[in-house]
Image 1 (cartoon, helix red, strand yellow):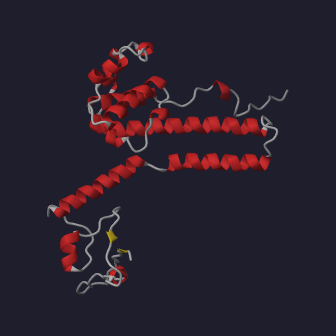
Image 2: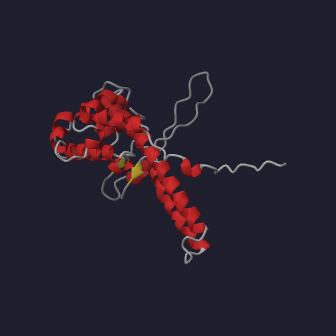
Length: 253
């Protein structure tokens, strides 16, 4: 008797949606221990990204207080949650202090945030996939197949905007650029790529990878000519000619 091949989707409905509760607890603990850790996740993480609604409410309270320039820790949030009943399910206000023990390290806050965001994105994909399947089976009889494809593509594009950006890596790169530029300005670093114009290099300190340099000035004052300027490396004596390097500047009229 031939055995029936099992479908790869068998038992899919019994799977639990992706989540990372440990990362949520660790991030909240890091934020409560040091509000400066919020800078590592502020650009991409929102309360809706948390799988546990209680964690989302705690994060929202932290965001609100930090945004007002106020301290957000286990003591200040205790008064806010103590009589609201929001934390009763997890043991009340003492849960805020417990979150501090879940923190592995403040420096890891960005990694915690990305893990939370990734789990949220996966949940959105699952919900979206279920909607696509149901509509394809005729859940909405008035929605033609071509219209379903168009709608699906729009949703995927919106999710793609969330999934392809990596604020953590961008933030790290931006910090590196700013640190290098600051060191160069103080004369403590090697500086960036030079233009070959001594007066400009003295002020500008060179170009740095990942940085956007904008040159402004009145019309017909040489911005375009400067933008087209190329500088080649010198040929070493007795050696082969090195590859040419180019300095390019943004010219604005």
